[in-house]
Length: 217
Image 1 (tube, rainbow, N blue to C red):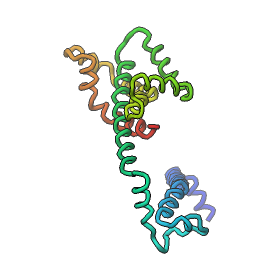
Image 2: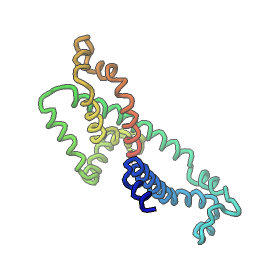
Image 3: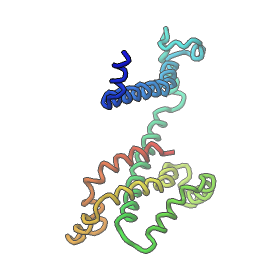
């Protein structure tokens, strides 16, 4: 018995399998813990108000109460809220992908005076608290006449310093020789941005879309 345990411990392959199995078990347990509130929320959505906080928890209610969904839809204008959320998410994420990729390309591939200083200054805005920006943003939106409109939210969130940083790091990984060859062929800088690295840019824009859309406030 001791010999078999010693052979198991001394085998790198078996040790790697055991460590990976242990990792999967821990990750599965952590995932179940994180999914617990969502499961409780879904179960509670089919219960009347008096049964939500009953203990022990009845995960499958004996009498389903789907009227909750109808009440929410009718009392909160849920259709309008869903449209607003979808419209803002699509518009803000699309604009952030456009502005961040353009700025990231410029900082990475177009040499201009004080490139690094401007980039670091733009990144430094990440350290400015939102409470400092809130009143100036309100004043600007009011002067533009965009109060009580979707554009007031869209324009404020159309730019992301972290998104510019992420896109710049991506463009730095593209060999400069590709951009130089495109310039020799007569492409403008915008043409290089739009066409030349498109195949490389698509995957990174998708990842950026996931991050920027998920981080939308």
